[in-house]
Image (tube, rainbow over all chains, first blue to last red; front, side):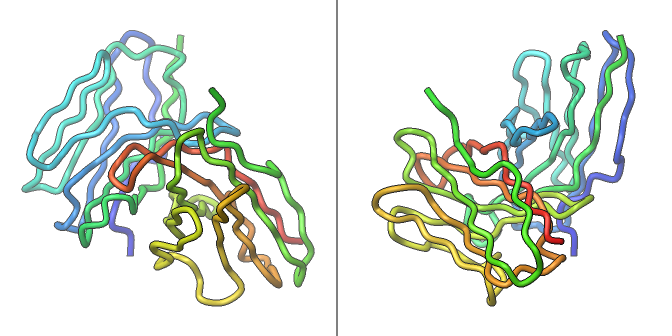
Length: 114
Length: 113
């Protein structure tokens, strides 16, 4: 059973435009959500996170929105840059009080075209 | 300020052999986590270790897999009698505490022939 779902395997956007990556989850026990970025042949790198007590968190060009009632979160990148091209993983934690156990989605490959 | 190091980066084994994957956490980190990424899947938690202790191994297969994090030296993920289904990328992460940010290594890609 997949508790964190990223239904879009890939997304292509033009440089300067907005990239929106979506993520859905099924486990209502999750209370902390993270986005990781991964380049080929490297490990995932933490990007931004949000606690379930918030509905928005912003860090520079990156904003994460959380809709708890819909069990949905999204990552907005504005403006998108070619260097943002990577696989983006949505992850969640908090099930059973174990914040260290991250549950990942399958990832979305973002391509930003110059 | 080296990050999390994993070796080897690529490992090829024949069915029935043993695979040993090593992970050196970031300096100052005493908490280590192992994740496995099967083809076309997301990363899946396997085990959480602190120095000399296994804290949570709920994600690790009950047979053939074991992990350790000795007082000295790297953390080791050991897979005995490998099968083709073990082919995957194995990522190690480390942190300063169980609720703190996890920093990931570059992974070891295991291929079982």
